[in-house]
Structures are given as C-alpha cells and as structure tokens.
Amino acid sequence: MPSRRDALSAGLLLSGGLALAPSAGAAAAPSGVRTGTPAGQDTASTLTTPAGLVVETTGGRVRGYESRGIATFKGIPYGADTGGEGRFLPPRKVDPWPGTRLCLVPGAICPQAGEGPSASPMAFLNPGTPSVQSEDCLNLNVWTPGTGLGTGTGTGKRPVMVWIHGGNYSTGSSLAIRATDGEALARRGDVVVVSVNHRLNALGYLDLGALGSDSDFAASGNAGMLDLVLALEWVRDNIAQFGGDADNVTIFGQSGGGLKVTTLCAMPAARGLFHKAIAQSGSIRQLFGREMTEPLALGLLSQLDVPASDLRQLQSLPLAQVQAAAQAAQGQWFAKAKPGEIWHLVGWAPVRDGTIIPADPYSVQGRALSADIPLMVGTVRHEFCLTMFTLEAEKRSWADLREGIGAAFRDPDPLIAAYRAAHPEEKPVGLQAMMSADSFNRHNALEQARGQTAAGRAPAFLYRFDWITPQFDGAPRAYHCSELPLVFDSLDIVPEAAGTGPRAKAMAANAADAWIAFARTGNPSHAGIGTWTPLSSPQDAATMVFDDTCRMERQNTDLIARMRDHALWL
Image 1 (cartoon, rainbow, N blue to C red):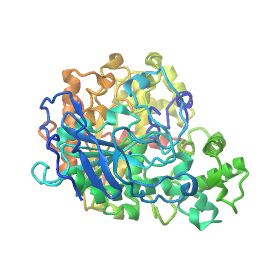
Image 2: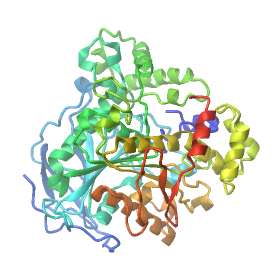
Image 3: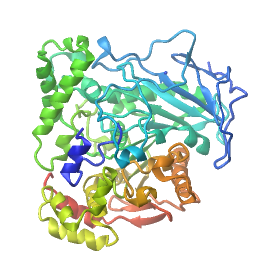
Image 4: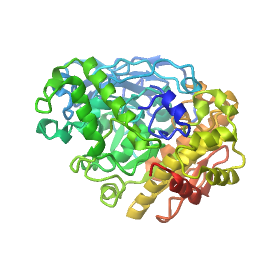
C-alpha cells in the first residue's frame, strides 16, 4: 500500500477506498446467557466466564465469555496453519482439537507490514486492538445474544452478519479498528455477528499460478479470498450452534473489506454461502489481470533468487525473508507507476484467473453469480479528507487545491468551478475530498448498484454518509471509516470517533438499525430513516443520505461523470 506520506503527496488521494486507516452437537443456551436484549435497553457493565458457555463446533468444543448479555467467542480456528507446507496453498479445514478450547482473546492476525504508531487525527479517531502476527491466522470471532437453536426473536433463528475487514488486500484484521467489535451490534439487533481473519499481502495474493510451473500453486493468487470462502463454509456448518440462521447470512465490509465483499459476489465457490451483501466505501468493477500479478510474482522470486521451476523453496524460507522480498517487489512495482495510475498503486490483490474468479464482479458474466443477492452499497461524503492526516490541511487555499489535482486531471479549472458551484458550502479541503471520492469510490459504488439493478433479480440500495464527526470541530468531516462506530453502534466502545452525545447516538441508531433491517429482511427501511427505495432502473441514482436528518436524494451523476471524463488515469 502507498503510505500515508505517499497519499499526502499525491494531493487528490487517488488511493481512496483501497486503504484502511490503521494498521481461537449444540450445547443448550446456558442460564447465564441472555437470549437477546431489546435495542436501547440498558445492561449491566459486567463480564463473566460461565462454566456452561461451551459450544460444540466441527473443530471441537469452544468456551467463551459473557459481556453485558452477549456471549463472545474470539479466535475460533476455522482453518489449519498456513505456514510451512501450507504457505501459498489453498486453505485446509482446521484439524479437530481435544478437550475444550478457550476462545477469550483475539486470534493471531496475518503477518503484515505497518507504519507504526502515529500521532495523526486518524490514529485518534480509529483506535485499534493489540495483536499478534502468525501464519496460523485463520480464525474468527462470534458475538451472539444466546447460543443454541430456538432463541432468536420472532423467526427462531437469528440473522447472521459476517464482517470482512479492510486494509486494501495487504493489512488489517478483524479487530484492527476497535469500533468493529460486534458486541453492541449483536445486542442492538438480536443478531449473530462474525468477523474473520484471513491471509493478506503476498501470503494471500502472490500469483504463482501466473508462472504455470507448478500446478499445486495454481490458486495462490486468490488464497486470501479462498480463506474467506472457507470461513463462510464454517459459518454454514456451525452458526446454528451459536443461535444463528445459516440460511440468512449477510456479508459486509468496508474499504478493502468492501472490495472483498464485491469479489466474493463473483466467485462460484462462494455461491450459496451468503444471501445479502453490503459494500462500504469499497466497490470494484474490474479485478486485476496477470499484467499486474505476474510482474509482482516474478519480482518476489527475483528478490529471493528462487527459480520458477522450484517454487517449493518458498515454503521453507524464513517468513521475514519472504516478507522483505514481497515489500521490495511491491516497491519496484509502485515505482513504475505514472502520475494518476491508481490501480498501479494497489499491489497484492486477487487475480481474475478465469477459474476461481471467472469474470469481473457485476460484469454481465460476473453478476450472474449474485443477481439474486440484495445489495447495499455506498460511500462517505469526504472519504480520504486530508484533515484525517493533519489538521493543518484545514488551511488549504483554492490555489492549493488547484495544485493538488493538476497532475491527475486534464483541464482542472472548469472542473473545480463546477464543483464549487454544486457545493458552495465546502472549503477547499472538503471539496478536494469530495472530488477524490467522486472520481473513484462514488463512481464505482454507483456503477455497482446499477449493475445489480440491471440484473433485475434483487434490489440495490445506494447510500452516502454525510454526517460529520464533532471531533476536532468537525475538521475530519465525513471521513473514511467514520461510519463504522455508527453502523456497529459502538460509540461507547470508541468515544474518540464521535463522542457519545445525543447527536452521535441518534445517528448510530439510524445507521445500525438500517444495517440490521437489511440483514434481517433484505430491506434497510425503518422508522428512523423512513422508506429507503432501491434503484428503479440501471439509470437511477436514488440515494439514502445519512445525516442528522436522513433523506432520499438523487446523486449528481452528471458531476461524477464529468470528473471521470477529466481523469488522466482512465
């Protein structure tokens, strides 16, 4: 991934939407576990470890803890160790363990490069969770209002919401951003929440299959996505034991997680494992071909002096050596990028290989796999606003804006004039953020929703978060990741993001209830926001705007199209 420093120097932050801010037979529900707490009802701030809080899974028994009425299990293994002989190969189911496994703390995350601690506003707004890195990282977390069957409200089994984290395809983890802890959402919606760790960067997306020399590694370019498929198979086979409905599974993810959600929609192996999809600030219509993945793979082999005829060497090399080679190969690839070539700055990513991923998501061929999957897709208003990185950006002038976008757009002056006329309330730094979001995030979300609508078999609901955080006097605006503590109703967990005042609480209620309603029924409408209408045609742009007063409006597609027409990288 381009670093934050690289993103700042790029001016327009054209990598917006790809990066993520920060870098273990069913038992009856034990008497100590409540079977659902109505939304808004106060619960005691208690945490207990009931002896009876044990669930039988296909891998063995797991024991969790209860926090304020929610049974929590962290770090449940769903796949075997991916190190050594498992490196760069498709995932395998976890070997069963004896006895009862304590699943009380987050599991290991995929090894990854990081920028280290930061003093930026972004680090304050998005506090993370301490983690341990290991190639033995295929694990997931479960939050449920009650284990066992027959405990869900109304239907007898609870809807399941599977969270897929962001960080492009290279960094992040299921709890990298503390706001995505599923406890509050499970309590509010009487739903089962699952979040997943999987392989990333070269460990998940090194396309050795492009070299064609060893068929055992044919799937290595999509190993991280196959991990997610295996996790969804675990949900199918086990979630009923946690009170969830395997026939009502919603996948949702933000930034890189949204890209993974979109990619799963184009994977035959994922067909039938989920029933609704939500892509937040991470839509993608065209996956990467081997014109990118092959040079990256050859670059890594060159760094390690490993011939393509002996790929098994890669499994015995020290992890640190492989990671260093991956970083160097990616750096060489980035260095070849021309100004504005956003896709060149992605690096490790899934590959459209014709088999595991036969076609681009929401292409005519690709969307056939998910034509019957209701879709929610959208962005935040300002995405990668420069004030996320430094509050000094609030002082940017119109000349600074012109200089910042000059290398990325042809004839930028009339473009700036059009945006200023359409959004006279925005300062230069806010307008620049909106232009960046329109050029990539917003355009792709719109096209994804329209592609789903064209398939004609399931609705597509489009949204935009305009709600501005009160922190730092609102300077970060509606920033990338700003909707997470609202959607997860986790303001009490992360008051840094937006405080816990009545305005923030009201916005969190409206957002979380929309996500819950969609997961439960496929329609996100509820009393707090009113009727949310899906797109009526492939030309429509009907959008739910989340703000202090939520409303339906039609996005300015003419302005978005004009932005795309001026982009030098297209």
